[in-house]
Figure: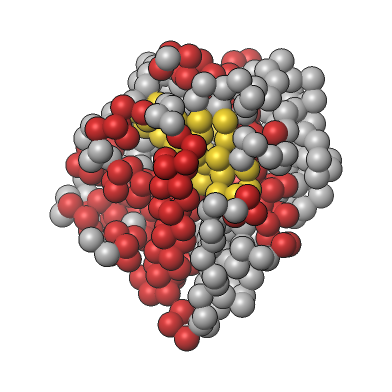
Length: 372
């Protein structure tokens, strides 16, 4: 199947295009509608990355990078040097340039923003359990999700060419048959879904996969069952060979528009739009039997980042959350230093890692140990 045809069916999956966690000093309001570049076919493509080069990676266990950061005073240190599992992490959209539909890897400003906003605040959550491999790639521009039926879909397809190449390089040169986690947020989660479909027919891939973290876009249960029936939802905190995900919204958000969009997508792909529910595993419990948890169950929320080379200490019992109709109803923390970004409809898309930072971190280690 052509790459573009794979992505054409997923247009409704993306909630927004301009993902990435804002710093405390950055804008706290929802970002403006991203600008759209010109005709995709008329633009010269950025040069493809060479994944044999260290510069083509945002994080590797053999180099010093933003994925090595840990919050001040953290009980769990960076353990990549002794980790017996890996994580292949795919970052969300951080490119908002108007010069092309896809980021050039020599765009130093975007690379710096990627490292500071999401490599440090998302990929680093896994450094207690795993060696971290995070490729740079010709990511689709932030307007791509709203132009998916045309040039945007082509931009995502080009981006996935790089993700596939990076993952193959990891498997061929570094994996050594070690167990691994696949993790992605927003655009990165979309690419994780595609990796699962493309590589899931390989028994060895299935055997090595600890879990797939598909965060920030809906994974419809009906499509998961049809496309990756071998990969169930992670039902317990120690479940392995499974998939988990959540999409955070403000506690009092009207879920009807979100649910309706999922129904329309399911109708388009299956002919039946009824009962369209997206996967929601509460990151405070990681237990389908416990869909709700109060703030007292939250071991640590990550505040806004004060500088480019440190992470602040996490804070205990800041917010609770509960799964409802496939979405994670989440408390909005009091105060102005949590880098909270509220998007239309009450989406808390930008904060889906940092609000639950210590819980994700501890559970990833527990899940890896359970796998072993």
